[in-house]
Structure formats: C-alpha cells, structure tokens
Image 1 (tube, helix red, strand yellow):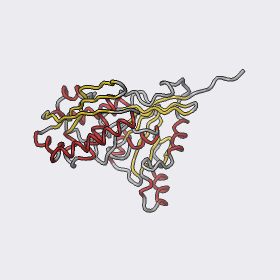
Image 2 (image 1 turned 45 degrees about the horizontal axis):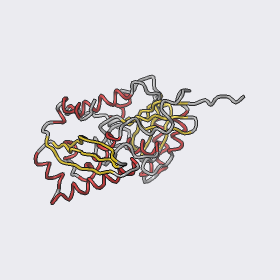
Image 3 (image 1 turned 180 degrees about the horizontal axis):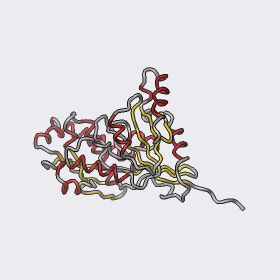
Image 4 (image 1 turned 180 degrees about the vertical axis):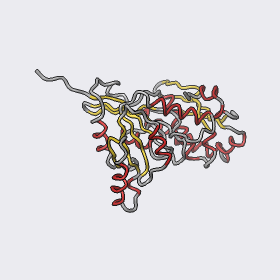
Length: 297
C-alpha cells in the first residue's frame, strides 16, 4: 500500500518599505506577472494573492503595499490597513530590504510583525553591489536579530537565488491540504488585474508627481466570442492632469492603452479590446467613500 502524499501549504506575506522590490519578487516567485511594478513608490496599493503549486507544496504569496510611514491621506491609511490585514493569518513573512541598507523604516516594519509568524529576511538587489564580498558581513550583522529565522540574498529582477528562497520557505509551511486548486494562479478577478495593468502603464509613462493622484476604475468587463471587452475610466485629481494623461493629439494615452492591452492579452491568453477615458474626481485619495468604490479596504 502506498503512503498518501504529505503536502504542505500556507500563506506567505511579502512586506517592506516602498520600492524595495516586493512586487517584482512575487512575480518572480510565481513565474507570472500579477503584481504591477514601477520605479515609483506607491505602485502597489492593493493586497493580492499569487499562488504557486510545486509537487507537494503550495505557496500562497500575499503581495502588500509598502508600509507608509507618513499618513498623508486616506489612501495611505487604507494601504497600511491592507498591510496589517495581510499579516493576520500568515505562516511566513518575507521582510524585503535592499542589500547593504538597513534603515530605521525597515526596523519600524519589523516591529509591527506578529510574533506567531516565521520571519525570513530577503536581501534583494544583491546583484547591484559593486563588491559582492561586502554582502556576507552585512548579512552576518543582521543575523544577530532574533526575529529572523533565515536570511536569504536574492536578485528578484534577475531571478538569482529564487529556488533557494522557495526551499527555505517550504521548511516553515505547515503540513496541510492545498488551499487552492493546483492550477490556480491568483484569487483576484481578471477585472481587478486589468485595472492594475492599466495603472502600471500610467505610472510608467507619466511624470513623477501625477501617479499619486491617479486611479483606474473598470466600468464594464465582458467576454464576447473569446474577446474581452473592457471599458476603463482613468481617475485624476485635477483638471490640469487630464491633458497630461492624454498627451498631444492623444499620443500618450494611445501608447498607454496599447502597452496595457498587450500585457492583458499575455496574462489572460486571449484578445482584448480596451477603451479608456479620463475623469476628474478632485480629492478622491482623501475620500473614504471614493476609496471604497475603487476597491480599497
């Protein structure tokens, strides 16, 4: 008689201050682009689950917004609630930092982590060090912190040491039946993912200040004869921002929509028809009601 397969499964939260590579790391871990990325802070605003099932182990990664140390408006507070909420029932926490950089803000995030979960320190961007021999002393210094069960250096951008990180995480997951069907990639809907992919292209194509006053609302999403037809509103805070999004002769918006559509087709595996327009909603980022309508918790 063959013994039943012993499986492991659990939730792994990915946390850290803004712009340390959390979303890039999750995308690399699951092997698909679910979380949007850009070089700007506040790119990730929502909690999202990315699911990887490998043989007898199922990893449910929880990508979170960067923890906002300055509570400037309701949007910042909503993102911090998302981070705290993600930590409630996780088995493992990946605290992501940049190589050779341990800041007061990193320490502040560590202090907020629940005692029950195993904390793995992920030292990201290790490939950017001019002298990699300095990495080991940096990690040895941080190993004095008793909260860290393990310290693993990686390059999320290049995919370096990702397999090692997965093996380390598996050691801390409980024996359990799988939480999701093995073929499941995320618990988020295509409607949500479409909004996120469009928002990413806006962040990447616009100036330094505008993205923080911008959001995307999917007003209609339907699939007809294998074609996903998506109507999306781009929300800006001021009338002057509308022209910035559209660009001269509509050129910028056309580029943004084209880039977003290509990513949607790659993720959804089918043709996408995407129509967008720009709306002005002054003060939306500090309006709790508006935030709820846009899916912020």
